[in-house]
Length: 433
Image (tube, rainbow, N blue to C red; front, side, top):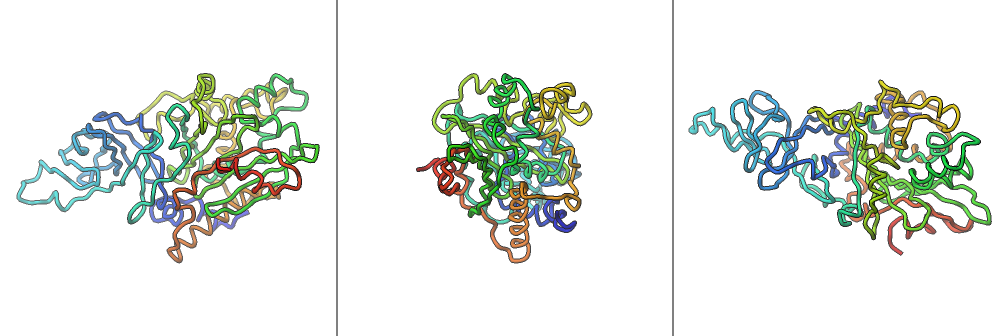
């Protein structure tokens, strides 16, 4: 369990909080590039407790700034998207990409008042079909060299969905390999067709669920975070290792499918505020285009993805709020839960979403009881706490700022029992021999 003070330290992300300050030192995904059309309407977003608007100018440049005009706090959601910036429709003030007021038509020119007004704005860059922003002090670090951002467009699939709980609820699910035999599993006696369907949709869960339900967990430190290895005895002198990567502060890479030619997956758990976050879900293949069948399955919500959204609204993330939510029990099939599946909510991503939202908006970690199966969660919390305290108390640069440190993968491997797992899986974890 955590102390109340540490739970507050890790979960509060707004302006002026230590965790918010840490996260602002990293590049943060904002929207997919294709969500912003040149010269068209802006899009509301909310990051680390700040209400913002994202837009693309007629020339194709991307901007991100405070939603509320510096003049009378009118919403720039309704702003005119003009050359080189946004113009508030209330009194015509126009802001450039850096927030500098460029025009103030309701003021006499001789006042030069516009030169004194700089609206809050953040620098943006595009990579991998995603708009990224840096919200921290000083010059931003190099963009993260994530493998999926460097492959051709036809080799990746990027989706995201809104989760009504603190980011740490979701992230901790991402570093918890022990839950797959239960939350995503089937009941004893379930038919083989259902098991195969689960395996096809869920990145190789079948082999893990056919072996030990309670894996042995081992954790190894890395310069950027941690490796979390879940070991199951596969017989014939072999262990089956499912290895999750954690890169501070909000990237997790779950294990791959153990079959040949696997897809690789990743999550980015981005705080909206203390009580909500956006779960970015990325699947890619390092060397080939995704097949039509693979893309169709992801659009249908297989594996880590949720693409079935409620009708869109203009609020922040109003277009990525899943149709499965608290008020409809996440469309749980209670009869299926009784007879076939361990948990009746359809879809792996929806199962994760529903159960992490059930832990309360901000989980009370002072009341939990952790065991050896929770080693990955314990490690992730320690890494986050150490990084936050070091930055707050000593201005120590956070871990994982090297762009190349992001070029990692999760892995699933069969290894002889006498082979050290992190070394034995090194090629799969890095994509390099």
